[in-house]
Amino acid sequence: MAPTSSVTSPSSDSAASAAVPDAVRARLEELFARAVADDRTAGITWAVVGGHDAPADVLAAGAAGDAELDGGVPADGSLRMGTGTISRIASMTKSFTAASILRLRDEGRLALDDAVSRHLPEAASLDTAAPDQPVITLRLLLTMSAGLVTDNPWGDRQEAMTREAFAEVLRGGLGLTSTPGTGFEYSNTGFALLGRVIDEVAGTPYTRYIEERFLRPLGMADTAFDVEDLDRDRVAIGHRIADRADRTRFEPLPFDRPGVYGAMAGLYSTTADVARWVRFLAAADAPDPAARDQEPLSTASRREMQQMHRHQRLAPLPAGPDGRSPGFDRVRGYGYGLVVEDWPDLGEIVSHSGGYPGYGSFMCWHRDSGVGVVALANAKYGPASSLAMEAMRVLLSDTRLLAPRRAVAAPRALEAARAALQWLASGEDAVADAWFADNMDLDTPRDERLRRRDAALAEAGLDLAALSALSVDDARVLSPAHLSWQLPARGEDRPGVRVDVLVDPRREALVQAIDVATALGSRNY
Image (cartoon, rainbow, N blue to C red; front, side):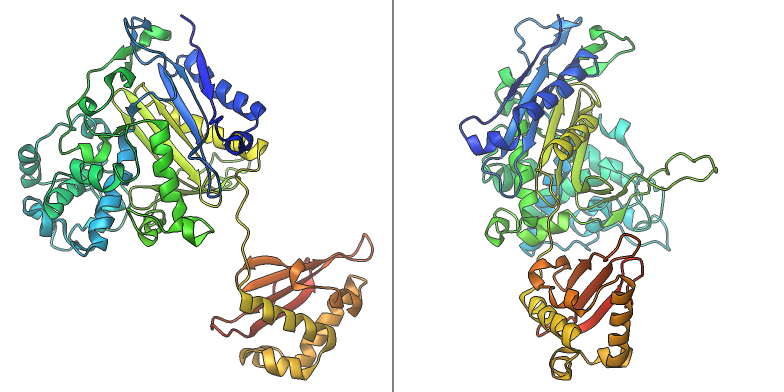
């Protein structure tokens, strides 16, 4: 049977639908349907997540493929993948575990720099692995900095491990690949430890704590740790990928029961529910303060999750003709249960993938706009990550949804910059006396500043009239404290002029730097 696909958009909200034009929605539909047609996954669901100012959680959604295959064809009674299909989100669960630790921290019930053994006595062996190393703390586990061995193949098969069996594992000791706090090493066992800390500190299983503190308050009704708590008719069966090339390669796998290791990968969900979670996390960076302040986790803690606390070294790009690598395609690091990456084209992207026996998943969002993509596949390590990132680049190239955030100047900076422009045009000492910070005349005498101004203008074929025409309303805002202007030269063979004004750190800020130079020159501060 040939794979087919479906695509939907929130038609009840015309503004949401208009945000993703029909042609873009068709490109996205084809992108995900092609992965099924090429037998890269049994099925997949996807959604475009609304940004900071969007009217809906989901701007467009679709699905392709089958919820369960048997011998390469849909199993008896199984359904096509749909936008409401429930799938495993695997290691995306780590963000919920991290959020729970931070909420307990905010309540004063633990500290991130607590040794794990303070809350989990059976982890005492982690404190004595070597006499010259620090103890393993909650912060080190959250940031994948504890030095524990990367354990995806083994950890993926431990979900149902009981507390008693986990305690025996801990009492036997854990191996380390680096001194705690000195490197990055992805560890599922580290998040299993965090789940056990939640159990002990909250006095309730981490599964219940996450459900009661996050899933229910956020209205994530199709998200749970146990498949028995969900609508089984909508749950996609996971598949392993066998050593065949056609659709018979997808072999169904049984469900696991939730246990200790579920804290690292145990949740099932839908793209719509995950979109709601993404919007909740992303709102910590929303421009509107009212949008940022949301329960059930503070704005500060959600921002903290999304900072790059530990750099993850990536392989360099292939060497060029000169035998040297041009560098790296991005900067990547780990926050608290989330990945943070800075891409040359997309800017800063926050994300987490999930790979698990039978499933592959990915959620990501653009920090400036809050727009994201969620993809859930029902094949082991399915191509959710690559497809979602490709979808983000479709949105970047074909819409304005991923527009970078523009810095806004502080009111005091605007006032100071207005005075700086007045001084540049007039050279009046009274203006400088009122607005120059104490470093200004020490760094460069006023008459020298004026000579540099005149030299730059002359090189560009301009005069003071060009400066007099500048306004703070025309400035390029580089930061709340830094404004810049570009003056085009008079004549094709001349460089333009760049004008910069920077104010000092005080609340009643004064001008700490004024620079007028040709566009080819470096800043003189």
